[in-house]
Length: 447
Image 1 (tube, rainbow, N blue to C red):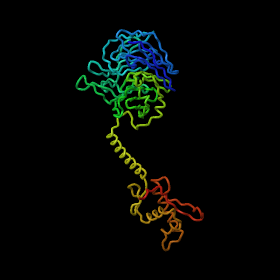
Image 2 (spheres, rainbow, N blue to C red):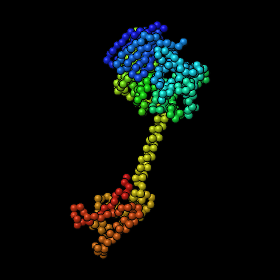
Image 3 (cartoon, one colour):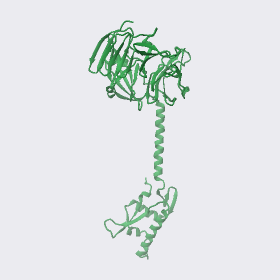
Image 4 (tube, helix red, strand yellow):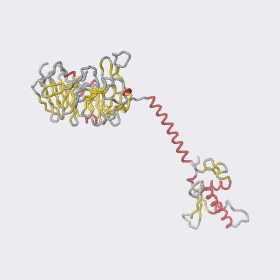
């Protein structure tokens, strides 16, 4: 391997570019430790993410025999930079300009394209492919005692299809979201098919909380980054697009990359650097030179537009069924409201007065008086007395008959209502005149 040399250091406003001669891609050789991005090759370079200054060391790193950076994934774990083999459990630590093996694992070569992540200062591997089959095993590295990998037993194991090569993943608190994956569970043992399936795993309670179908509009990105706050960024430089997943409601928005941003070459396992609002990534130019550049992710989020979709599958049939069910539920709800509103309300049918289906009385004169009271703001004492007048009766007797009628009517309805049916009061403008009103709120609205 030829000795690496720094070619270009370029500062453009908030962007920095760093170039190198290399015999292989920078993929998988970047790892962030605090505010420094470590760039591993034959030697080590350090990019200060705050000042955007690069420091290059001429000291050659001592590698183990047959160790290739491209075959390992870097992690920052327990204040150490470690390198995990892509295909097995072999684990190495960068220490004093040397890469040293630290695990005591068997080189089983059965973890190809597994999902590898750090949670609560522990390194995990989920799934993976090897010996013509995928797995849904979850294992964790015991860095405190055995320096080997232990199986994590979790509930819902049978719900997860054996998988490898995850579309993308992100964390929401203690919950791992896996979105899309490959599986070799088809009829031929060496077949692999990408499934738009996903699942949610609870690390603390060791249980699969949910399995789901992924929205077919969400394609597998070339690379992605979980910003560990509110968003996940999915990069599609081939189509100049970035999709932004909002974690709290799983909604998706889209941003169109600039020409410079679309030169991003990060792949699935390539690490990004993050400092404040900036993401540092691997890029190249038309001459094939490799750079480290940055983009402002806050600006990307603020200038994206919503797609009105989520990461979950849009099932049109279920949506239509839900709409129909919702419509009928709404009709039933309105019907119940109307029925309850008219419950225990009075209504006139022919010459009878009813409450619901119960007849209170049947009396043509009483119904006529009630109708007249309903259709008018009030009736005067004289107007009501006319219903009880008869030849030979004096005015005092007529007035007593009218008052007796009203009292009897109020008493008869008092078992149904807590308020008087017919009331009398002094006229607002002429206090000498008595008027009578009926409580119209006790009646159904007439159609």
